[in-house]
Length: 306
Image (cartoon, rainbow, N blue to C red):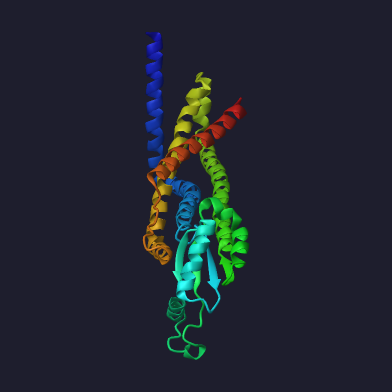
């Protein structure tokens, strides 16, 4: 019975500390709001960069992350000859044929994109060569230079161009953003701990007389520490929620231009909004960081009192 009574009293004090901590934050709501805004920005910035990185990674496919090789044929090659060359290359190397652009189609596309309708008649009927476009399977994408060298030696082939260089730069840039995001997570997690710890330290200074009185009455350190730990946890939890709301607001503002930019490359592109998993990560991560920051602050102060 004594053990049950002790457990019940302990649970009651936990509940009181939990509710009273939230009530104290409400009574100091303007100061609390300022602190939560700083915490929300610290938690929301890396989360926002993470979401932007995921949206950029989704553009890899429409931007051509399935690389291709463009084979320019000699100017005298006809459409039928171009088809036969493409089929022979396909049979020889098992390269999928993405597109065969005849001389007529090449001229029409050039006129469309260059805006020079009716100004190329002096160059002949079809001044541009036929073009073959091959896509490389994922297993063969590491051998771009090898395939380019092989195809450039084929009869009727004038030049071979690949898009691998800028694709590598794009993949490297996205990888850099991911690494930067990891660094920012660590830095802003530390910043959140420091913000909460400094706030709790100020609260401890304001409650110095109360703490000294409790220690004189024989209260254990865990009893004194508990309200401040819950207060730090509330700072982190509310800061995570606030940060997610700020993130949603920012994405609502940026959604139209992001949607337009994505659809310039892929008509089916849709923005990936901050997910519920991200909300849970901010909520639980913020709460843990707030608790940790408060634990460091109150632990340091209690050790100093001793």
